Image (cartoon, rainbow, N blue to C red; front, side, top):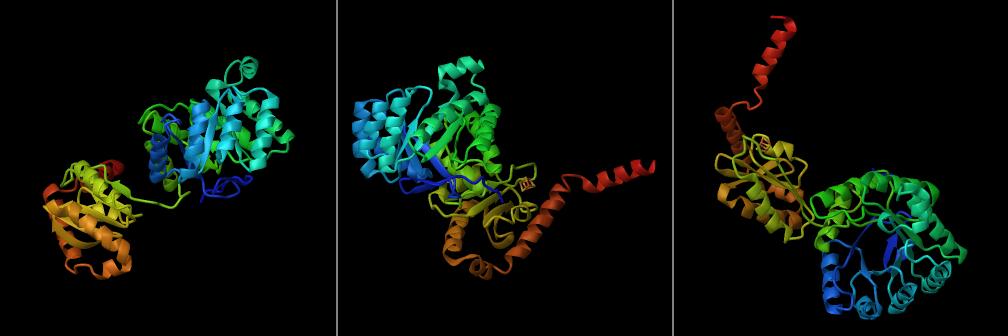
Length: 402
Ligand code: SF4
């Protein structure tokens, strides 16, 4: 279990952040905000992919006007992303947004920052202090010589002080860096100094797969240390991928309940009786559409498959032209290999509606025996791929000096 850092609680619209609330997933639209219908379509897609909160740029008057139409029709709270022009923050508040993100690197006038904080406070709208290594305050950049973690933290603390001076405390903070170790260090330093909730992200992570790896490396490291209240994967990709990745990461870390399919599959090896990659891809395609919160395993052979994947709710392993369908490691049905995916889908649906006990009770009584025979047959044909017996004998001979 991850012991989470204690942070203050705030609300982004209906979504609680900090104070022990579930870690929330954020993403950001890529449409022009003035395109109300296009932006709303993307907001809905992001929600469907697992986003709890969506950020939308508010970069000009047309964008602010667009927000006035988008916010009331959005299925999730909207945060307006503000750079340079504090007036757009005031306009976004008037449009009804549930959160603001201010960049201290480019909104630098304390009077303006305080004016926004007072207006946000009157409406109960939180502000994220969004420090970014790529757009750090130029005085701090000069002082530190580079966007090092201490510089990012100093920028955040300075902005927090300005907000606190007008008694504004609905604050969350991010100190994003594109260099993963610097990002991790920045958040660790900040977490030691304040108890406001933190929004995690590796900025400008780039396209998948490297963008995904950078984001997972930085975000997961901190989440495992208990740091982090909301997250965003900043990928150069369709933002739906960001939301999906964020949601999946939280599920894998046990920080959110599984909302859909978790497909596990063996990496395949010389023992595989099927094209594991093709079957796994097909299983993923048909099962994902069902939106069942189950873990499904696709295993290349019945010799090791059901045992290795016994933690999965349901799975299929191949053996001698047959598919061996198993639930929690017990083989319950044997089907022709060509019907493996179909049988998996059918059993997954029954499992979701009837439960594990009922499906185990309905098992074909001969299935377990057939699986054992298929495994024995495969072993007889393929032998012991690891040559354990011969290796043991050789090791023993060497140890005895024979
Ligand atoms: S389940 Fe079978 S095919 Fe897949 S990796 Fe393990 S031994 Fe190889």
